[in-house]
Image (cartoon, rainbow, N blue to C red; front, side):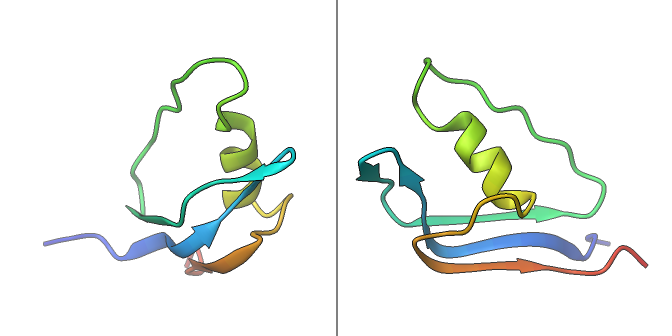
Length: 68
């Protein structure tokens, strides 16, 4: 049985300084954990801040389900 989706990004574009990311399609199930790995300045913090709601996307959408 699969867990319900907790978070989805649908064609989400993130602002990375003066540039923008390509559109991101991504989903995460409730209870899953992620690891963000990459070079300095590649957007790890921006991605984390966006999925937690501290930053907004330039375009596209983020869907969150309740934690009930």
